[in-house]
Image (cartoon, rainbow, N blue to C red; front, side, top):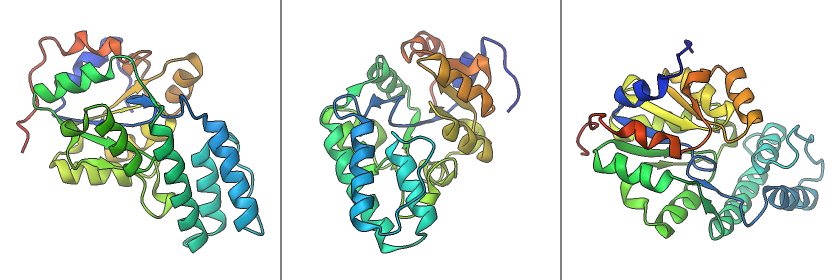
Length: 242
């Protein structure tokens, strides 16, 4: 990605007609009341019961998605991985009941929707979990059918750009007129592969370092979603929603 100056964020929104949101992070803290480390431990126990050869321990031992990816690498295309993915989906759906909204995102989504931006979710979490959370919080109508989560093959999770490609297709958007809001290196890399401009959400220094290492511009990273609200003032609306 090319370097940007500190005022990059207004330019990113001014050029956008479609905004793609990662889910866990920019939209909510999915595991606020149901710790990710507990979910990861549940998956490790599931692996011990169902995968006799086990799987190599991922570097991020407290990340449920890392365990799912590790299983998919070890048992590609197997029914075991399909079953594990379904089990993780059930855990994510449970976690949505105690998920905490990211400060400012409700207003951001509503203002973007009112300005006729096309909105989509592009997440490595289950689309079912994302849909359930958005329904519970009254935000689902802003996204409609454009909620794209992981598919049966976990190796298509970001940084593979599969879910972003689906979102561009269903919203009728080009990469150049779209904007990805994400909080991980995988989000940044997936967006870069398709040529989608990227806006990083980094609530702490480690996240910022990870995003910059993945190619994000320091001038295109915010530490809170609330910072984005004043940026929308004076920016023209996106294309009318179909």
